[in-house]
Length: 143
Image (tube, rainbow, N blue to C red; front, side):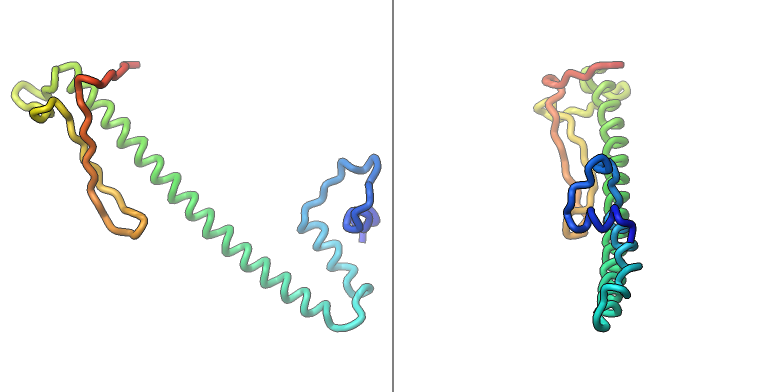
């Protein structure tokens, strides 16, 4: 093993070498090179098998988390697009006092505009949610 890794694994101060920060994988790899010299029985095979299994489990978990992150990023992107469209509709409705076109109003009897959005809930079921926004209380800035 690298002497500096031995000192680090033993918890000794590295003095001026405190800036050396190997990863856990580098330390493990260096340690596994020395296992034959440190092993009295067949514990090495058991340890290597356990490390290999743990690495496979970690790789699977990392891949699952990466897929989950990608899914959440896609959801956020979709929500941003929806919000962009909602703000555009609000701008038009506010500018035209609730009207889109010459004869169609977006407002109900209480001067609320309602947006409906389909989404998948935590149980995987598709649902629709309606959001009512009082148009007279909305301030939509144009940029």
